[in-house]
Image (tube, rainbow, N blue to C red; front, side, top):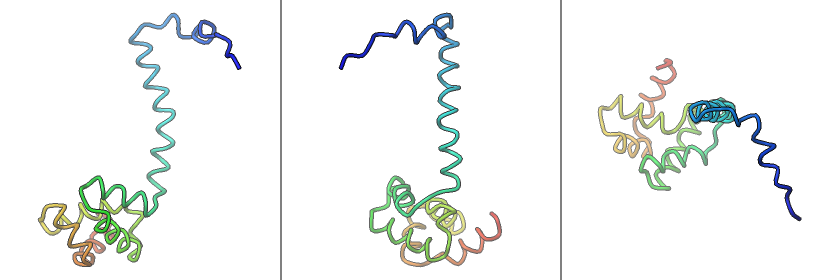
Length: 120
């Protein structure tokens, strides 16, 4: 199957735009695509997504699994596992990796849960 070459026809509405205007148009269209995904990400997560976040923060898959499971057990998964790690680091004054390992071992959760429940 051969596709009809209609590039010139499809680009007519862009032909009179300068490079700056094209750049602006690109970012406007990108915002239209990304904004709904960003809004969805704020309200929807899963254990797999949260493990992925923790992996990118430098935790091993087993460490991430333990942290996410404990988030689920406490009903905090929707707040974000990475956020819980950062909150634990802030509250304990420890580097986030060390605080995350403590969370994986079951420590610091009471302080984190209390702080998050307080809306902080």
